[in-house]
Amino acid sequence: MKHASLITLSFLGVFAATPMAQALDYPLPPQGSRLIGQNQTYTVQEGDRNLQAIARRFDTGAMLILEANNTIAPVPRAGTVVTIPTQLLLPDVPREGIVINLAELRLYYFPRGENIVQVYPIGIGLQGLETPVMTTRIGQKIPNPTWTPTAGIRQRSLERGVKLPAVVPAGPNNPLGRFAMRLAYGNGEYLIHGTSAPDSVGLRVSSGCIRMNAPDIKVLFSATPTGTPVRVINDPVKYSVEPNGLRYIEVHRPLSQAEEQNTQTMPYVLPVGFEQFRHSGEVEKAVLDKALTRRAGYPVVVSSGKVPATTITTPAVQSAQNQDTAVENNHLMQ
View 1 (tube, rainbow, N blue to C red):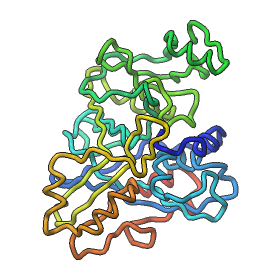
View 2 (tube, rainbow, N blue to C red):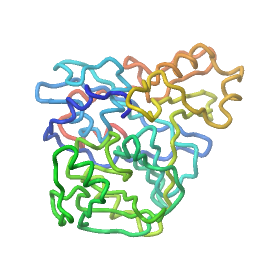
View 3 (cartoon, rainbow, N blue to C red):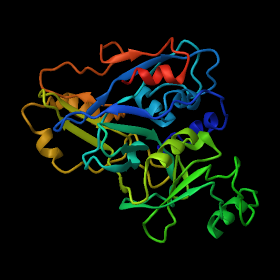
View 4 (cartoon, rainbow, N blue to C red):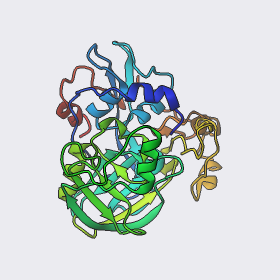
């Protein structure tokens, strides 16, 4: 997991019936720009049972909220002001089809002919059963899928005291949810699908497939034709030189290979061209180094001589404290 281990599992095991936001639609920035959205703040209410419920309200992941807030309690007290990381840098890849960045547990969809990008939280493969980096396409779309657990999955379930049936029929209790899309990679064993366990979205819990919230996979399934290109990357560090000259960096905790690894301190691979970005006279090295260490999961201004506009007191952050519905929260992104 992204080093939240037992403390994460303790609060993600409780389901909270919080309204889910639909896809977050961001207007595409102009060519040469990768910065989209604005961070938000949310004041925890008495009825908010856990971070996962809050994450579903904003259609983001609990792990991303943990990254952004660092010392927040898994079950925050009412009145706690939470930063919702809904400002981000687009991955440095072509803006087409589906792009999945494993390190940030997000899926990006670029609808053909539209000047928007849709961003969704996802669940990915657990340690030892990692979702692979790949360039592929949607090979098959499957409404109301059945689930045939593999021998390995059945054995692991037996070790936890759960005996799985040979086939799980389609329906609300199916682990694949109502919709699945098979990737044309390997033997077709990797799917983008829904789930009957919504608290698993935003974590490393699958056998390699990509899980999505039920409303999200429904939207994506209807929007993406067979043959849609899919690119899966693993980039914990993203950076950008914006057209206005500002330099940004967005750093996520890398995916660990073993439970004992601390993702707050373990090393990660820097992207191509980063050293040139780092040593530019336009970058404030101390601010950059702090961002690389902090790993907040949202864009930080590292331009030389500029005050980082990334705290909850800046105009770049909007408050969603008094929004009662997911739809209203989503409108803050427009």
